[in-house]
Length: 589
Image 1 (cartoon, one colour):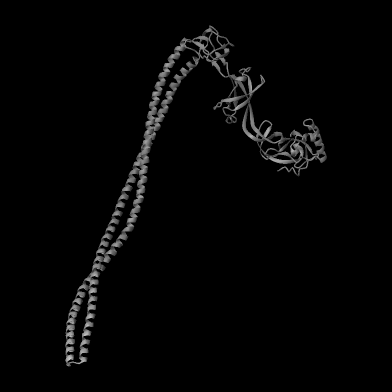
Image 2 (image 1 turned 135 degrees about the vertical axis):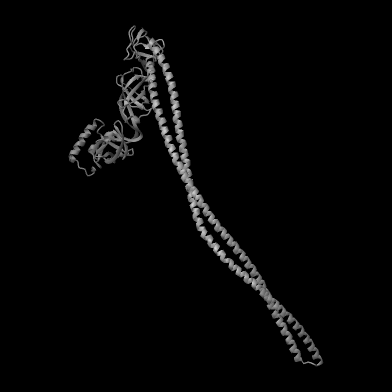
């Protein structure tokens, strides 16, 4: 439920609130001065122009942007940068001692001498045995790896063959689909071609009949022409006779032996003959045209007959081709189906071969792992023997002299002449003489937020000294306590007076945000899940809800609600509500 500050009524009466304000004023007067005018001498225009209302006395601070980070403090230990522990885990008598605890030694200096004759011989023999075993181990492992690699190649080869066979099946199946379409098309084309053949066969008798009719028409037309030509000859004879009659009648008319009427009748007869001749010549010409047309008809009929025959031949050819295409497609379909079955059978055989190759590979890998495991036991035994002797002789030369591995202070030394050295504790401990380091252990929640190169704050309480140290390394494996070791480099200029083993408080700055809106943490009030602050505007307190982010030392990041530049109430905010008049009596104004 939201807290309503505007309608909220204090349990105290207004008189009580005024009394509390007076008490607060008296308290604040010792910290910042109770004189409002004096306080306003340092405020901006917003505060200096505020009316003298006699409101609740408050202190304020300007809301500004600054850097903020969360801090995590852990304890660590100072140590020498270089520290050497000399262990000799074999019983040996010390024959000579050249130093004592507390002395400064240098790298390569002889600390003491041990009687290690038999140990050195054992080490030499163990080393030779280990080198021989290692060579044999490497040779056998190489041979086993080669066998495994060959088995893998066999599997890969069969896999390649299977891939090729599958591709062949896919291609054949696609060809089957194409051939089935071709068969379907050919079967559709066959009835069409058959229909074309039938139509062509029907066209041939029609063309033959047309040709026969044209052949019969020609002689008949030729007979008509002959008849008309004979009739024309008769007319020509009659015309000549008529012309002679006209000439004779004219002669008779001239001597008075004939009348004009006789002459006119003869001429009329001549004219009729000529008209008949013209009509006959026209008919003859028409018949001759008919003869030409009949010849053309005959030629066209012959051509039509030839075309029909050609169309028939083509239709029969198309029909035969469609049947051939169908039969070829069916044959190809059967062949492709046979190829698919063959490829599937081949694929089955290849898959069986792959299973055999995989079984062989697993056997080779199993044999390899089992053999290597056995070899590892043997080589590890030889290595352990050599390592034990190497550890014994790590800081011992071939004459049994114990050599200092670094320069520094001999902080511990457990050897005396003619006595056996301890095998369960360090023979010598040397702290390096130069740089120092700090080691700390952090939790798994903190380590992901740290990076090599980050700066930390360090405080050494025993010498009351603080300084900055850089993270040099971060272990990526947890120890038995599930903590991760962080190593810090101590600057050279602060190492004076520091000693190995001192405790150090290390502060890590985490989740840094630059230029964030930051306010004092105590200025933020809460009501359930709601966070809010009060600011001063025109001499009045204003309620502002805020969202917070990182929390640093005494300060909190504001994500929303404030933008910077506001005057935040830092003291007295618990005694005001939204709209109350306030008097600024101190603070960062």
